[in-house]
Amino acid sequence: MAAIEISNVTKRFGTYAAVNDVSLSVPEGSIYGFIGPNGSGKTTTIRMIMNILLPDAGEVTVFGRHSSSSARDDVGYLPEERGLYKRMPVRRLLRYYGQLKGKSVRDLDPVINAWLERFQLTPWADKKIEALSKGMAQKVQFISAIVSKPTLLILDEPFSGLDPVNADALKDAVLDLRRSGTTIVFSTHDMSAAERLCDRIFMIFKGQKVLDGTLDEIQSNYGHDTVRVRVTGGRAALAGFTEIDSVNDFGNYQDLRMSGDPQAFLQKLAQKTTVQHFELTKPSLHDIFVRIAQPTAEDMKRPVSGAN
Image (cartoon, rainbow, N blue to C red):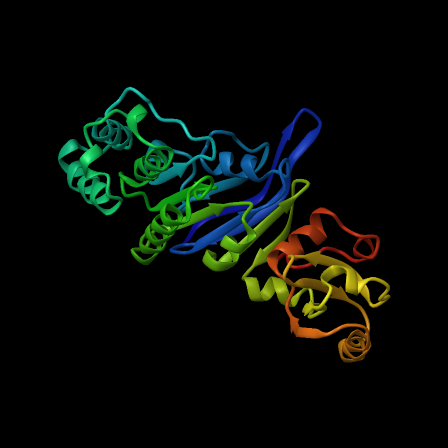
């Protein structure tokens, strides 16, 4: 059974179609990435999954069920806009969120204790939220989303604002939850995180599905027209080459979107500057995202592929 089935869903606000005839299926037990520019319809789609909004057309099911209190109790949600009751102690707050999902304090306390210990928050269990650092508060909010042991967990920018140590702690927790069978919808603007974590990736743009597949499937639809180079002189040394359609400059190296023969280009480049690194590579998810969200005239001539 799919964890989430979205079938030909449309959601309008007045005459504006925020989501237009979108279908997708989220496999049970997977990490499913949701990406898209601001205003693309991503949040509207998540809110329909959460039953915060109802579709104008089509249907959304979670574990085969339409909206119901029992279905909602199976879903945990970490919103991008964080918000906790600042004057509540940590343990009391986590019990409160768990009880909202129908869990008893007797069942909740062992789960709360285990997560507080894992995130090194046990000494803070009886402190008010307002006494916590930002990183601590974000970990408490993460625990609040999973304390009821949901079978579906929706994470909206879970690593935003976290330092690398705390981000790694949450990343490891997410992977452990997936291993235990939890289905995870991961909404992010961090393309590298989506590449590393997600089993499948869905992209919505202007209300329509434009990508849906594994990273390999998506990259294959965009060919092997990317060259990664590191040359003496950096980006300035790449000026004047007609084979280069676009440059994504990372400072120490550049990803070039190419046309023509890469080997012939390498020979010309070596005559102009010292080539320290030259690699044919698949386009990154970041590059594909930019191609779709900011299409060139050439891109406009072909349909956006990758959607199933």
